[in-house]
Image (cartoon, helix red, strand yellow):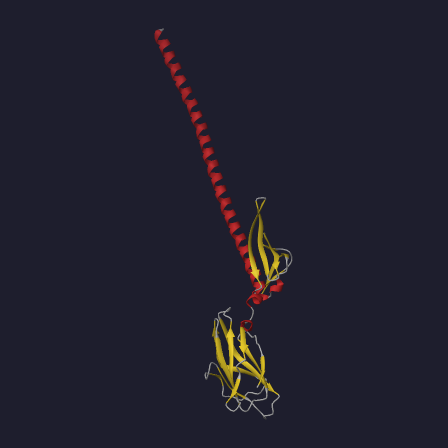
Length: 281
């Protein structure tokens, strides 16, 4: 009887252990599944975040590039003609190597670009290049701004910074050589270069006269010997170059007596500008 009770007790204890073991296995499985779910969720979120961050960075980089291109295109348009920078909001188009404003916006791969031009004064315009795009339902925008100057007017031409002095002009060598002439530059530009002359004379009675030589400075030949008629353009064999603020003399030798003539001298600069002075000897 006692043995039977012991066996039953042992059996019950074993059953209880097995039940506990089964219960522990279920709990462990639930815990393991939960941990795996958490880890997987974290990993997925990290992947999605990294992927979104990479996409945002790529989108932003493309937008900044388009905004910078908008500024460079506006600079190119300014260089074509400052008058093309008309106030308002514009899009861009390109034909060949030339940019122009077209419409109120332009579109590239889902990006919208606008160029807003604001007149600051007669010679200054501010350009703001803005690029917008949509990512996951949200709109982002980047902008760059730059001020453009009417540099052609601001810098001017070489002739604007050069003057010709004739107050000391004198005829020598049988009234055939005109001396005492000089150029003066203000120094507002680095160099001034004269590449040609156009000299004309009228009113005298000395017969046919031609221009033979031009010297600058002193006896340094920059043209000649030759036989150039009145009013013709004379291209110098050696350009006259003045650096900074400078004064340099020049002389003109004619083929005969030039006394009594009205002489007009027009140096031509390498930027195409020209200035003329007249004197009578």
